[in-house]
Amino acid sequence: MDHPQFWIHGASTFIPGMLKLIKHVSLPQLVDMTELHTKESDNLKELFVKHGSDKHFHNYQILYSQIMDPSKEMSIMEIGLGSRNPSMPSSMYYYEQDKNFINTTGGCLRSFREYCPLSKFYGADVDRESLFTEDRIETFFVDQLDEKSLKDLFEGRMFDVIIDDGLHHIGSNMNTLLEALDHVNIGGYIIIEDIVIADNWHVIDFVVSRIPGLETKLVNFGTGACIYLVKNVSYQRGM
Image 1 (cartoon, rainbow, N blue to C red):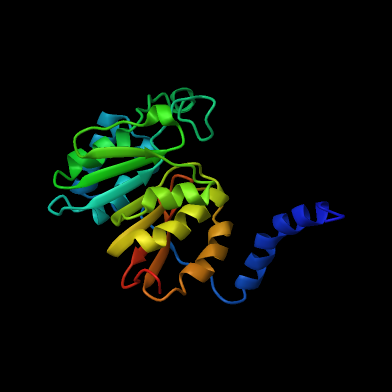
Image 2: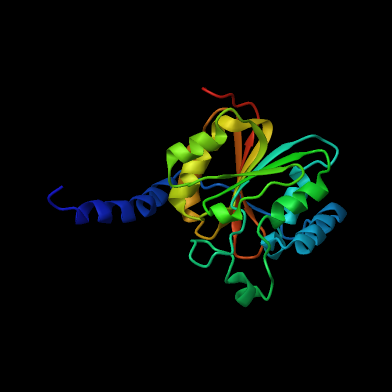
């Protein structure tokens, strides 16, 4: 504690150092979904545009059209509602200038609701002004940097799909992933969106991929952002 700069230095070099070690063993396969368009994915893309969700810019409809089944009753949670408050981190306020596209808060949940007419949807955000309730949609407050806040959000709930489209910070991503593992149904998915620095996830995947009952992939969409995908094949809470 006499030299706190050593802690900062150690934290900044830990993941790069671990990545160099892991390269001696293996790295996760980067799955390319760039060209896997289908009629279903094109339909979902149209809904993203209609409801003001930016996900179509990243081609995420290719993945979501494969894991969301309109014929089933699913329970889907998305963290990150697309706040337009410019003072909020990861705000969508500046998206209008960058992409000439007006993002609508809650647009993704509304897109999924129309795509999956039998399912129920839940959302969460740190911006309380973004919260809303509509038919088959409920939203709640959450602070992804606060472990207790995440525990309160997930308490007593299980989901078929859990999406982290919130703060886009390695700390918030890790907190969400750790809590989500015990709240995703068998056959369900955890999705961490908008990963730009994949090296961090090579290190995380080295551990997660070895948890019995889980399958993992790092998915590329050709847009500069990847998704970290965890499928619960047989993992049970408390294992």
